[in-house]
Image (cartoon, rainbow, N blue to C red; front, side, top):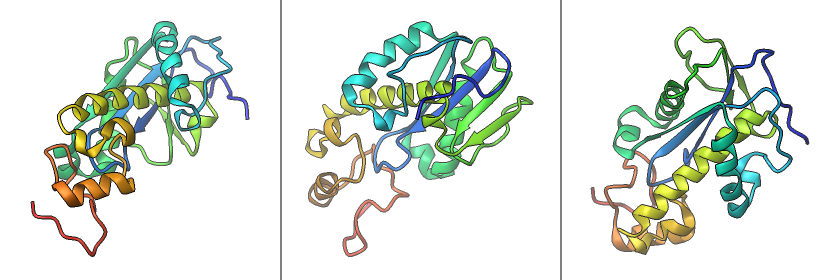
Length: 200
């Protein structure tokens, strides 16, 4: 399905999305993007539908051609304190705060959001496969978070975050069972199946 360029009829529509919500370790990362009115890129789609190489190619294009963009991480300690939904929304809010100019309308991937200032917004299920600004935010959130996970992989290579990016793969959970947890793991998440117990 081809992406629609705009949802709002104005020129300052912001798309926002997050990455890493289902991970066992690392931050949840959100991005917000305002694209030029006539921006188009046939390669741009939901980041989950793109290869890592394609996301890497698109990142500098988006960051160069966007009118403005913002990216923000919310880290594991705060995720454990306020829960992952609130952390995801807070990350989106703080990425929008970085935009200059500020948007006139906000479109959000998914179905949950909290009002940001007095700016009208619309949640859109699978919006990252329907609207360019959300797709662009999806790519930036994913690439910035992946870069962070590759960095902390060097500190704890046994979890192979360079490969799994903190998601609950069999390999990641096997490493948790063998080595325990790190300061980057989300203690409020079920890190192992119920038959195993972790000591915090």
